[in-house]
Image (cartoon, rainbow, N blue to C red; front, side):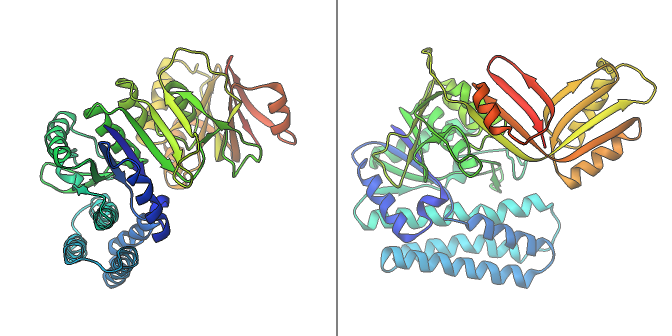
Length: 421
């Protein structure tokens, strides 16, 4: 059994959805669990509805949602020619869930309402795609993932209840695969024990696919993207990127840790733990080789892998009484960073100073600064870049750092990190 995950870009238009159906048709004789995201920019539109609702602009929120519902109905009509009564009823049923939320009084946190509203995107897209596949005689079973993916109530970043999810998933999916080769469900969302919708946080759809692959002992996972493969850098920031055809789980986690927008580390863990290979392939040309991510002991020759994080702050924290930055002070400082939910991207300390490179986040940074200044002297440089290169060469450093000033540098045998301006 294989797991496929399609992102929102893959079904952004009706033409792309038809192409994806052709791609899926190539695998109709295999057992494939298909995880699909919300259509195009649906999640962004739903976030605007959440914001309007939470700002007590109820009428605006309802109008925005009515427009979004109409867009999905039009999309379905264009894709299918004419919606079946079954699909129309399903879309209405799902949208009613959000309409109920928009009619409520505010008595819960923002994150709760976010999850109840935003989670509808994946449910709508998968309902439409499942109906289309069945219409063109590609038999597929649609499953509401909220009946399977059980979590706690940490809204917007829910933690999976593994034992419960595993038990339900094996029962539900094994039953579905006895009747169908293709099973369609949603990524990114789940539900609590009382059936309240939740979302799984950043890259939740990839994570969902990996979780189910782990539980079902899948042969492989393929994430279908609109790029030919993983690249050694972001092509929007670096003009001369090169493809990476093969890479280890360990290397991908390192890239993600340093800020590369590749595969989230939480997606890697369930796959690495069961040695399930992950393919990144292009849905625009399924014949391209793509990238294989897996466990391997063979030596792989990588190009320099570059990650550039923008909008960074270099923070220097000094003790006022010249006490050393040792365990006691480090513990205090780390506690303040943790309390303000600020991740440290790079760190260095000297006798009486602690230096950290962090993302610029005005709301959280102000809170951190106020807390630190109660006991320490604090200096900062803003509008900086954090440049990380794995498998660096001097040539690549000379080329990329031309006309840049380095404020802080750390180097190991494989990785160099520099805070530059």
